Length: 432
Image 1 (cartoon, rainbow, N blue to C red):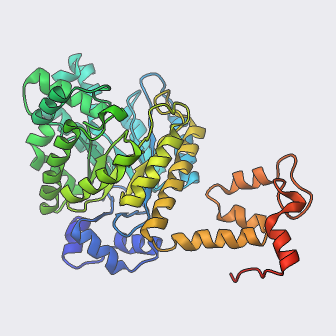
Image 2 (tube, rainbow, N blue to C red):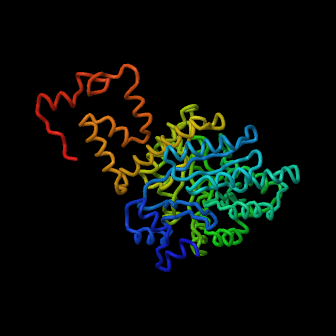
């Protein structure tokens, strides 16, 4: 039985217990949200070393880190270094987006090495296999696509991105709309080419029940991909994007009726004033299903610093009700990220996620900040480092050249405001 089916029967699974313990809430609360479809626990029955994470209503906003080879660079060792960097930086999940080398071997290695939930995008491998077999992605058969999906599921992948909403009607909207950046989703592009060449409907939409059967058998969470997501602020919240979202809302309902856990992916590139609207639209149309967004990136000119543009958008999205942030690294739009890029991307997204949790009132979020404030008042540098998102960096920055010889930091030195106020006004240190 899936987590959704168990929850609906009133059963609290070991995975629900583990999520509740991690979140610091009652297991019954987790069960109720899973039963409602507002929380998912990606937990493939074949992922034996899994430490479960919950994604959705009332839980901490989660962060995902993308890994994976490319056709230009293939190194399993590098991917394992990136995996370690992501885990050390505090990611909640990882996705293997490999498109180069022995994709199956890379995936199996990552799953075996990772105790966190692992996601993939099976159409990447299906498309690449079609090039090897037929010399073209567009010659891929529906059975080829489903064979790739089944292989990923059997290997133990906990959630899969499937672009079921890239339909003939969505493509028609895209043509009518006209865009600056057209389509930036790789999986969406594969399917658009296939649909147009074959003059047939998307197999993931047409054979959705087949997909649900596979997902239900292994309790794999479907992450309904946004193949029409905007890759430019000029294309944000247009008719093609919303056409796909309406379809995804229908597919969420069908998945839940089949006992399959499901979440929905979202944009993408959005100006600040459209982020809350996009979150509200998804939550209404998809009946509160968990929302998983890339960024969103709030400007198109941040090349080299897109972990910052993504974190700005991610904070607003999380505060507006988004449940899951896919990180953006400094290498976004420029190159395959290296381990340091991965670390920077995870930390930036964790800042955004926590900022959102403060607004949402997630348990423990405000207390974490209060403890940091107390440590700062005490000029307790080791406690400040311990409470920070990157303790190693906090210690290194505090102890770098030009550090003060006194108890304060070198920014203010002997003129530290808190030290002066405590000395001259007798202000007491706040209670811990």
